[in-house]
Length: 313
Image (cartoon, rainbow, N blue to C red):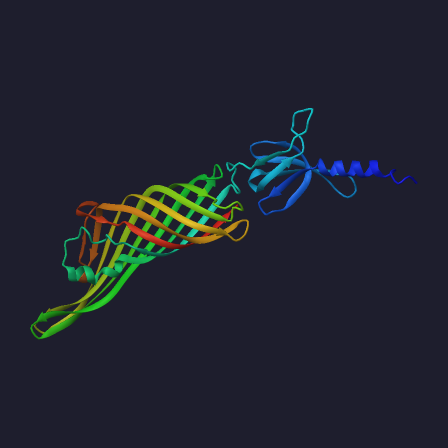
């Protein structure tokens, strides 16, 4: 057999291999295929299997790092290689569900309260507490989504002090307070991916809504008379709500395709100007006020620092 008889076959195989298109995914997988069409959302391509049949497939551009076409879609006399970077306008996943858990502080809590320094130090534990934030957003593009956010905050204080009732008599007064804040509002989420593999995510959120405030109190103190004293209990409830705003920032790492973890923080602004008070004391005594204007607005603004868990689907 002529040793050059197989040369045309090798040339055909070589040209066939060279003519194949190529797709490289964000996971660094390479797919040799034939690209049929490309639009703003996805690539349509064909793969030949071992038995010779052809399978048509689609791939979202958000999963493509780059692709190469051996020829242009239009007919031209001279084929030319194209290398096009993927656009970032297509979201990896349509929905983003986030959960933030951590501590909080309210450094401006007593700014407008008229009281002694000793009393402010006494109740300072109400300024720090625990929070849970959650939000769900529909990603319109790869960098922006719209949705809603909810935030829960709790702090408490419990203690006993000795109060002087006469020059030689000190009696205990115990107090217990529990504070709750609930925030709810619509939100806009922005996301950026600083690395080419899209493993790191920087997210910012902006929200405006309503904050509901609740402060429960219970105090036990002695009722002193000529024969001695008797402990009595007084229960109080202070409630109000106000317009509020929330800003959040997180930095996350994508552990899995649908799961990312990281750290973050929030700033919630709120100034409570109206509130109501209910009080119940011994012998069925009670006192209440409606939703009234406060002499000085309560600054309920706080700072959160969180561990972040986000699910993308």
